[in-house]
Image (cartoon, rainbow, N blue to C red):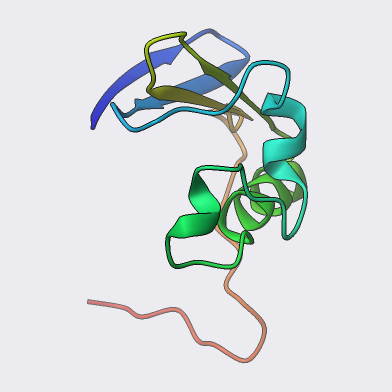
Length: 102
């Protein structure tokens, strides 16, 4: 597995790639569907919700995620998130939590 970071003024990109069997040609859009598993993945453990959760989290934060696989295997995931404004942005604690002060 390898990764790469990149950014534009509007968004951040974190590319993650592996050398596994890849996603069959024409299937990357389905890879993010809940419970979808490729033919080769069905022989392994898992239920096919991992990438669906990734897509939901990225989308909830205003971003996008895409995938592409090469003919020799391996898959590259490309999540993109909008960058926070540098002025006036602040962290909002989760409901029911108190910010910790050091």
